[in-house]
Length: 72
Image (tube, rainbow, N blue to C red; front, side, top):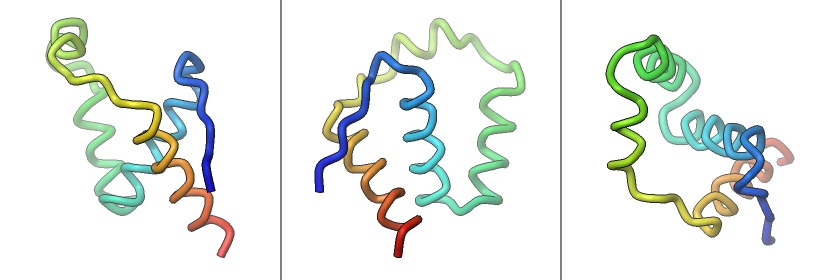
């Protein structure tokens, strides 16, 4: 099954990220990560330039896995 995500749509990208975090870490650890990452520490602008881009294929696999887990 192939899922398409509009990588220019921040809502879709955010959803994919949340699904991946929950899948990989579990809800409690994903929540702790979100608090650490988004509580205002560091220089987001500088950090985002050092991150490698995420491909549409990776995002599609994350979303597909999340959707298949939600619909057993």
